[in-house]
Image (cartoon, rainbow, N blue to C red; front, top):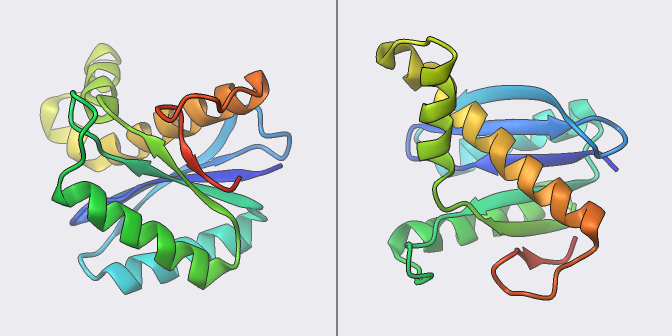
Length: 150
């Protein structure tokens, strides 16, 4: 099953799409835009073009597991994606993915100025990798792993 992960942001939204077998990240992109509806339409177009069968949206939780205003925006965006695509949409705990994405880019020799262009796609890849690993394990018992219908 081909899965798309989204790291929804105020200005940039990272996109990562798995291969057809749902094993590896096969495609990444960054969508630009501040308008939530417009970004959702762009993401829905990518999903159609890439043959996506399910979507996972990163859910930013605080380190103590609580949710703030940003988490509510991501929940609303996930609902919009479900409406726009008709696909099942799950939420995935994305704590520290942006920090890890910056560390990965730094380790590859990218300068901080270059991080801005790529960090959201790398964060989406980390969300997707974590989600796919959990699917392979078949373990969604704990609420920390993810939420949704996929």
